[in-house]
Image (cartoon, rainbow, N blue to C red; front, side, top):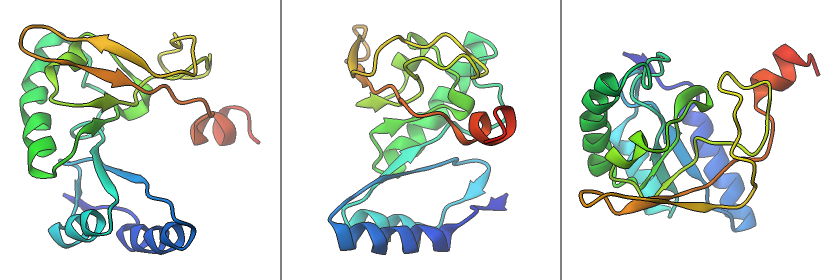
Length: 159
């Protein structure tokens, strides 16, 4: 397992944000990078939030419903262990119906409009919206992002 890139950077960002009265959500990939319990406790004790960013960042989370459901069990375990209520999919892939299998309050895997994303069908709004659940899951709030991703800016557009 790799060490999470920039765990010390998390501490620097925490200090910077605290100076301005902000608090962010730090999203971690649970089965690709080691996220120390010390860092998790430090983030939570300073009123920052921890989110789950996929499971292992291999691009296969939505390859099939069977794969997603199997991984959802592990993702839910990390959500519980990390006291996390938010999720964001790697590479901005999403399937809003399948995400109902996660025990989340919100998801940030969609975008408003961005034809350069790997899954280029944006949700067409900048406003949060509710995804209705099922009898087993209460549903969740979807929070679309509105800024281009670094890959789009630096690799595709060469900005």
